[in-house]
Length: 155
Image (cartoon, rainbow, N blue to C red):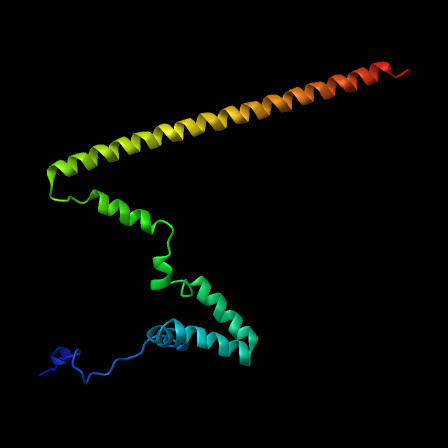
């Protein structure tokens, strides 16, 4: 008769959690459980006791994006306001007349925005062409002056 280990309840509160990985992974997990403050404290202590350790921790925190993760960084994304506005603009209000008006207004605004962007493109193209024409005129006048000076000099 053989015994099987399938009767063991690994989710029981008395079950021991085995820590896997090397000392670096265990330390990383330990610091992650305690939050960003623990990482910063470890970095400061590294700078105090042995500056290359602090520098290495700072580089690792930046490289692994631990320094800039969390609630504060996610709230300051440049497009979060626009994303929330677009999400609220696309949800239905429950009033079909208002939803039709809102859809028509959004379509009109998108059309005006595309027309304005086309206008800006034409304006930039016209400015670039004017600058290029000015450059070519200056270049032509400089080459004409240098050819006149070359003709005027006796050999």
